[in-house]
Every structure is written in structure tokens, then in C-alpha cells.
Image (cartoon, rainbow, N blue to C red; front, side, top):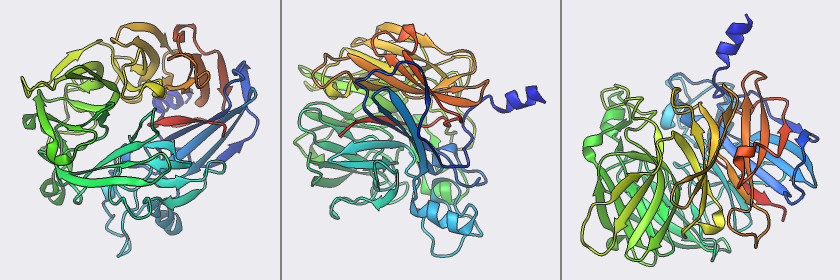
Length: 465
């Protein structure tokens, strides 16, 4: 029986069925006194099981670890989207994957999204994000849901889970795919100033309908990757995968000047690949350098006929893209910097869009499937060279590592990494605090939780206000 229970727990993707408050958590080691604030994390946690629904589309659940003067507390809450509320009232699932209503769902219902991918703080507002709907505003202390935030009606439609905040001006820039409706090739692009006012919003056509999870922003440019996880309404209507891997479409990246318009976009081409996440990007004379986590073939999504992609090629590695803006070529270069499998790259966000000297990502055991097997942290320099590498005990998994600077004027990389670790044998989670420039030494402190936090997507630190 015990062996069966351990086999059942080989991954940490299943939802937890409760909301909880833990005001006083045990700490092993000592929490740095400078860590005063809250780590917010977001991830899929379905309220009800839905037949055939992709893990990606589960209801968002927020996990908040509050650290103050060496003490730690925890709170989790579902994001109460219109979908969550409708299903809660019905006491059952009403939607399958990607907004598909179940046959027995009441008429007139529309999918209100999951708000399950990221959580960011900008212009005094805490926003839960996923890429198919507007941001959902969250009350910082209680995690109560306040509803959609549309910037005084100036922003509409889809809004990326990966907006970028300029470290110098505080401006937030964002995009949305499927901007002309589900499975369409239109993208939107816009910006919000440091006070929270929308300053621009426009739409344009991409080469084809693509799932565009992240984008690239430098000091003076914005880049839109159109990569071949393609969307097709025809497939969806015929019961085939709405999103599928079509490498023959090739890879496109549109480069736009930050102060330009969509009409000025120049499209670069390269071999088919897929990227969920960008580490950072910057300008170097007439070139743009972007460090990404690149897959040769997309994971999690099949070919149009339903065949799975090759698991050997469906793993991400740290890769450098180089764009020559001098007009000599419309091809961009792709150069792998490491052979280690990894995902969820982060930097010291004070260097976002600027040349950076430190980066971190969660690394995986190459013998296990990509997701559900992230089991360590890698620290790299500005050229992708490994500076440190920490591995967890076999079976344990780790979340995206979030960097927190020691102080506002501390040198780049001087601070901590915060990551949530699932302890497979005990089936519960810890919040781990690492010295960011010495990850190999292991955590300097562990905050012990009595239950597990399911493997999720993204999180961010919000310092005490």
C-alpha cells in the first residue's frame, strides 16, 4: 500500500481541494532580516475535475508567503473568476479545455478564464494574469478577487501573462494574441505608464495564428515571437487539437522600435522551434541579443493529427538569439549555450531589457519528462556560463526561482532566490531561500508548510510597502 501511495505521488500536479491560512510557520535556519514582503505564486488548481481538460487551463490558485522580521506566514485562495464562480454555484465543472463549454452546461455561459499563470504588482495594483483575458485585480493582504481591470476601458481582449516593466521608467508594456477572436492571427500591443494609465493600444496581423506565451523587450525595441504552436478554428470545430505543433510554418520574430508602430515591424525568420520563456534581452550596437529557453519541438501539444512530439526534442535549453538590425539578413541566429534541460528563467529585474551579468533557471532531470521534473537551480553569468548548480534529493521538484535584491542600491545579483520545493516523500512543500550568488551551498533557510503547493507557473516578490 505504501509503495502504491508513493507511486501515486510521483508528480505534484494534482490540485489541492482547500483554502488555508497558516499564520506562524516553522523556519529552519534563519530568514534574512532584509526579506520583508510577500512572495506571491500562481498556478493551475482546478476546482472541479473536467474530462479531457489540459493541465494548463485549471483555475488559478494564489499562494502568498509573507516574510517579516524573520517570521513567515502563508495564505492561499482561488482567484474567483466568472468561470470559478459559475462552477462553484453549480457544484460541478461547466467548461473543458480552452473555453469549451461542456454539453450539459447552462445556455448563455461564457468562459471567464482561469487567471492561473502569473501575478505581478504594478502602479499599486496586484494583478493575476493568464493570456486569454484581461488582468484580474487581487487585494494584496486578503487575496480577495476584485474583478477584471481594463484600465478605464482603454484595454480590451487578451493580455499576456508576461508583461515587462521598464526598471528605469516604471512603464509596463504588454501584448495579447488571438486579439481578433479565438484562434486568429491578430496581436495587440500596448503600454501602461507608472501611474497606471494606458498610454497606447493597437492591433496588427502576425504571419499566422500562434500561441505566443512571452515576448522580448529591450531598451528601445519590442520583439514578437510567432512560433509554430499554431491555432486553428477548423481543427477545433472538427474535434481535433485547437493548438498543434506545425514546424513547417517556421519561426518568425517581428522587431518593432519601442517608439514606432506596428506598421514598422520587420520580420526575421529561423528554423522551427518553440519558446515559452525569455530570460532577458538587450541591445549591442546594431544587434539585439535575447536569451531564451528554446525547445526543438514543442512539449505538451501534439501534431495536428494528434501524434505526440518527440520527447527527446521536447526539452528546453538555454539558447541565445541574435538579430542583425543593419539590414544584411532577415535570418536570426540560434545558439545553444548549455545542454542542460531547464525552464522558468529569471534575472535581477533591475536589469530587465539591459545587459545582465546574472541569470537563474530551474533545471530538470533529463531522464524524466520536462514538466513535473524540475529538480534544481542553475546560476549563469551574462554569457550563459554556469556559476552554480544545486540539485534536490531524488523525486523532489522546484518552482521558478524568484530573485529579491538585498536593497534597492545593492549590486546586480546581490540578494536571494526564493523557490517553492515539493518534498515527494513527505508530500508537502517548503519555501526555500538561497543566497543568489551561492546556490550550490543550498538554502540558507526553509519555511516549512504542512501541505503541498502544486507545481505551478510564475511568481513575484512584492516588498513591504
